[in-house]
Each structure stands twice: as structure tokens, then as C-alpha cells.
Length: 437
Image (cartoon, rainbow, N blue to C red; front, side, top):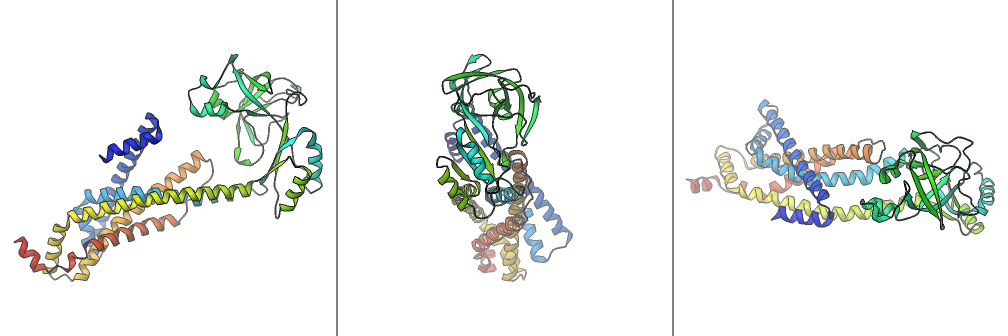
């Protein structure tokens, strides 16, 4: 019933059979991996017990884990999955965003100016130069709707991919430049010649290549304020979007678009250190139509949104963790009779109650610490892969999860195990043995 409910919930949220299958398969692989790693870790701990390196309470606690290796590995994998989600969320939210911001080079633009009209660009350039920003470059931008591809008319219905449909169901931002922008790298073809002024050539970003499957020599027809212009793809580019400088999916040659016939606006970005309120207020007073965007303030808003999302997810994961603890308590209850027999024998052989309690703390504390250590290792690995493959940024693995994961798991599971079984240590051994006899 639980598996069927999980399939239904994932299917309703994903609304895609392949995505549902991928999520379920990924979760199954994660649980299986956690189980196998937990089995290996418990074998290593059993080897430490056999070596005699641990004390008596530790040897007995590790022996209890070894006798129930399958059940212990199952509990460790279940708890480890929840701890993995909690740790990964904390690492991505806190460490990754902070490390990304710290990795930005000095002087990275933190102010964008958009909606600069064609007749204002010289006045705006002079305004910025008078305030020590003489090297600011203004970029032209025209907005066009894709209406033709490779000589055929296209619409949203011609594409099956929802992301592509959303992407082309809006205007493209097109710019032009005689030279390849510094944050761009050619992946195919050659940049246009200096004498290509006015030729309807097009440079496409690799995202456009992925979505529209365009290649060098293909034609794209864009509609600008009711006027259709057909461009020929001359080269393909890869754009460094995290440079915080104006970049564009599509670019053409200077002169290919006439600002007198096609609506054109300008935009720019620059770095403004220290207090920037006075300059921005003066800018808005002088150019009321220009929209300044404070990237630092925007990033703080993004962080605030992420914090709210993380809080909601943490609330849900707390229920998952509580469910894991209930599973642990249920497993403990199923073995209560066996525990009473073991404790009675130990007490009859002279073991003190405190020794038995330490044994239980060792057993469940090591189980929780093992789950936390496995979750920490996998969370760090996943975060590293996310940074390298998804966010394309360097990532230094933080040290605090290696302490928080095992310590938190050990304290939580150890405390739950001790609280659930502390009554067992108080039962008189002769009573238990008499009942069993």
C-alpha cells in the first residue's frame, strides 16, 4: 500500500511517465546503495570488535549489530536517506551559494541598467563618465519573435518539448557586435569579418542549438514590430552567463537592424562599490524611464526565497525523520522479548545495569553514527557533482557535515534506542529466566 501510494503521489506531481520512473528508480538505487554501504560499514565495525581494540561494552554493542546485520543495515539505510536529504539541502542552500558568491572575481558588475532609449545612450554614457564610470559599454537590444526556421513557418505547436514551447512563446533578445564579446567562446564556425557590416548573419548560443536544433547555414526568421527579417546562422557560441555582463542568445552584425525602423533599447552593467543609493537616485531623476537592477539586493531576495523553500522542505523532512524514528521504535519493540532474555543472561552472569545501558547506547549510537556518516559522504558527493555538472562552479567540501551527520545521527538514534529499552535493564533477571523456563 505504501509503495502504491508513493507511485501515485510521484506520478501526480511529475505528470510524466519517464520522469516518474526516473524518480522511483533513483530512490530505489539510493536505498539499495545505502543498504550495501551500511552492510560494508557494519562488517568493518565487526572486524574492529574481533580485533579486541574496543572495550567490553563496545564489543558487546558491536556484536549485537553483527548478529542483526540485515535489520541494522535496513534501519541505517532508511535513516540515512532522510539524513541525506537534510544534509544535502543544508549544503546546497548554505555552502554552495556562499562559495559561488565568494568565487566571483573582484569588480564583477552588481548594477544593471535596462530600458535605455536609443536617444539617451550618449547622455547616459556622459552621466556615468562624470561619476568615474567611463569604461561602461552600452549594448543594443531588439526584441523579435521567431516565426520561421529553415525556410518554414513555425509556431509553438511545432515543438513537443514544453521548455522549448515556453522559450519560443516569447520574444528573443537580439543584439549586435563587431567583435566577439569577452564572455563568449566560439564552438563552431567563424566570427564575421570586419566588412560584414549589414549582412543578416546570426550567432546562436548553445542553448538555442539545444532547443531549436539549429546548425551553421540554417535560416531563422524573426519578426520585429511587424517586420520579418531572415538571418543565416554563421557560428555557434558558448556563453558564460554568470559573468553578470549583458549577454544574448542571438547576435547579429552591426547594421543588420536599422534602429530607425526596428525598436531598439540599450542596456549595460557595471560595478558600483560602497554606498550606491545617491548615484542611483540621481540616475533615476535624470532618466526616469531607465530601470536600475541591484544584483546584490536581488541575490538577497533569492536567498530569502530559498530560505523559505528550505524551511518548508525541512518541515516536511522532519515528518520523514519522525517516520524513520517510528520505524526504529517498531523494530526495537519487535525484538523486546529477545532483548529481555539477553539482558537477563548478562545480569545473571554478573553484568551491572550501567554496563548493559552502555551496551545499548553503543549499539544504537553506532547505528545512528553509521547512518549519518554514510549520508554525509553521499551528500558531499552529490553536492560536488551538482556544482561541477549543473552549476559549473568550483566547490570546496565543507567540514561541518562530517561532524553534524555522524554526531546528529548517533545522538538521535542512540537516545531513541536507550529510551525505548531502558525498561529492559530494570527487569529482574530471575523473573525473565523463570518465565522463559
